[in-house]
Image (cartoon, rainbow, N blue to C red):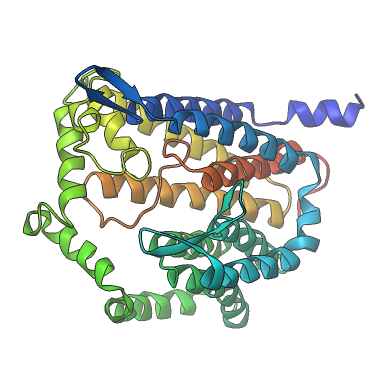
Length: 371
């Protein structure tokens, strides 16, 4: 091993690696419980947690792949990857697999590809490239250029319909833009225009999406229909009280009262079994995880690397905030999973890949001067 390779290993953010593996391990353990349901003859367990282990192994391999090359080469592949992503999103509209009324996956036989997850990576890379071209506060022309590359994939994703993933793409890009810095005039205009346009978005929503917002305002209005998810989720978390009911001891999940308990509402299973104390420990782990990503963005020696790490920070930050707020009934249900805790193949691989990208930036920060 060369001196440069040894030095890169020394600069790896091992804290981030450890926290990622701990969160994924807790996710698999939680999925084992979420996969089970009680019968008269005992407990029966589905295979979600076994599949998640396979996705995790593939994700870990993807993380290593994203670490081995110089991340600055991504500037060259940014546009080709972006156009491939748009083509895949268009293919979903015509050839996608329909699940629960939404067309979001491409059936490849051995694997269902979800291009909206790839869109998060491609938008992150192209956004970081565009924003790193020049120093100083962002101008109107560059802002419109960056927003356009975010609106194109986000719009195609929302049409699937997948409002949660579409918003995640826009929030990720918006976070990098704010991190980059805007001219005061742009901030003032945005502070007026964005809130004024939000009511117009109501007329662009599908009927079921409008119902989710109305349910958020009053879940008891339809307790056996659209409000069922939120009501059962809050019951599950509340019944855990301080210390929880113990592993495999949750009644709401084990007796099938809690829907989508292995995906969007996986943290409700965790809260019921481990209680307030366990939930606070999980939240503390996520805070330390986000802090390690933030440190990498701060210590990066070039703008492109810093924006990449910042984008990954906002990617995870918004998913954690929205999912936990949704499960607690503090936000409408929008179908955003909790990273490393919720079940999902494409999402798990993307999550590990983005961590590999952050580690790539971290381990190469000594190789060139500040720019």
